[in-house]
Image (cartoon, rainbow, N blue to C red; front, side, top):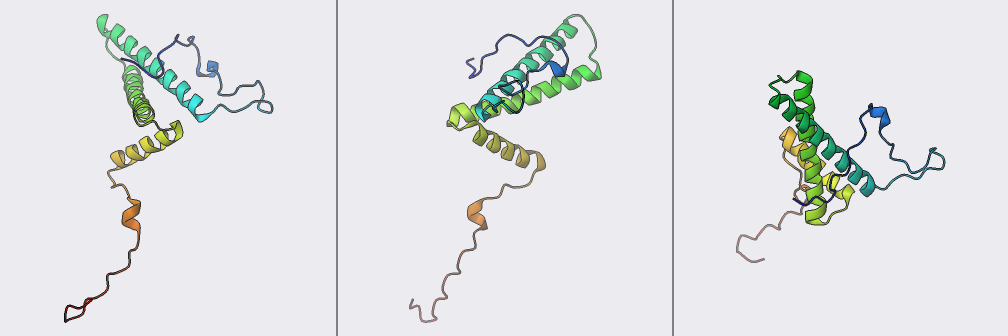
Length: 141
């Protein structure tokens, strides 16, 4: 399966503070912010690696006859849900040729309505339209 952002080498193990920040420079004064496309690609890669890691740990535990802990189940389920979210964003970007910020807004909007059960609002339905003129009793306009 071809991914837009193929997995690269796994990040080194460590604490969350070892993650590289999303800044080009060393200090905020001379740093330039990465674009939304670059941040999205970075996040998709990180989420994909987290999913692969969680799946590998789960498979290792199952193959060795170990029971899952609550933390393992949570991490695996969270990684799966996060991967599904970002795969949907990737589908919007590649399938519909959208910019990353537009794709993020569309998926967020879809998820909000999907999770809350409230119907989406349609701008065309919210417009106040003029009432049609009353027809005369004799049928003439």
